[in-house]
Length: 109
Picture 1 (spheres, rainbow, N blue to C red):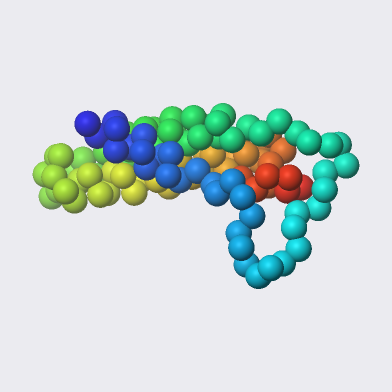
Picture 2: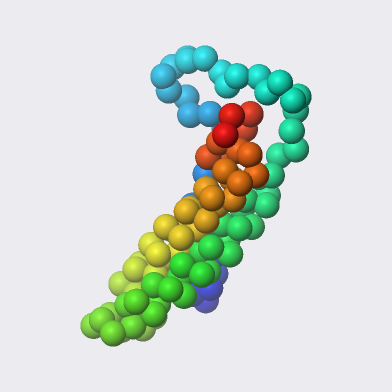
């Protein structure tokens, strides 16, 4: 069950795929001179899920010696936080490697 929580935390840590609405209305992204590019959003989501599971496992090892009982609410919160952080970092790295700009479509990286 913990793997499901970690996968969900990794999925939720994936960058937002559209431009933030501030400053309102603000200019849109610059058009890409190469034309429309394929959207690697699903690849980034899958990497976020894998990163979430890895982060959950890492934080499970880190919090193993603490007074948190295994599978308690505090344990789930601590390991899910680790899953969120690692999933977010890993998805950002892959997003920049694929030429994105932090999950924003048509952003120059």
